[in-house]
Amino acid sequence: MATAIESDLIFKASLKKALLILVVSIAFVVLGVWLIGEKPFLGWLSVGFFGLGIPASLFMMLPNTTYLKLDREGFEVVAMSRRSRIKWTEVDAFHMGKIHGNKMIAIAFSPEYTK
Image 1 (cartoon, one colour):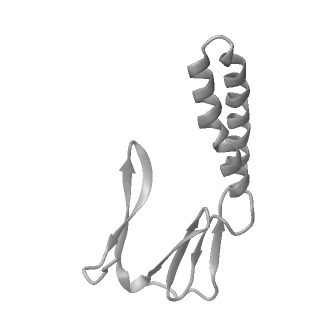
Image 2: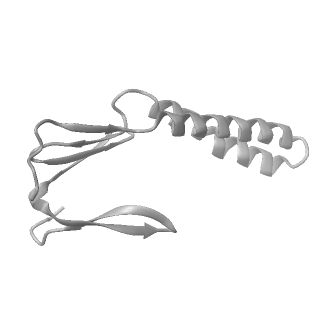
Image 3: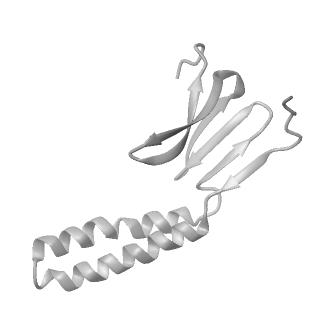
């Protein structure tokens, strides 16, 4: 038997993962700068691509930019400050799924869901 949610539950993003992304991005940017002298195209590609990971990871570390909030009416997913609100009445079920080999929680929406 399901029980009602007494208060909001909030699951925040992992600070450790954001730090890992930051460290890896910085390492590949440094490697790319070193590589520019040997292979300019590959070096600049590395600097450009992994350079984007630095501000993204720093943004992820800011409070209230990435979390999952469960309440009586439904749940809210906030990823990089983009909000998505789904009511419990719009969901039929949850199940495990895979996207590109990664396990994910999949949502089976009810027929009335129109978004």
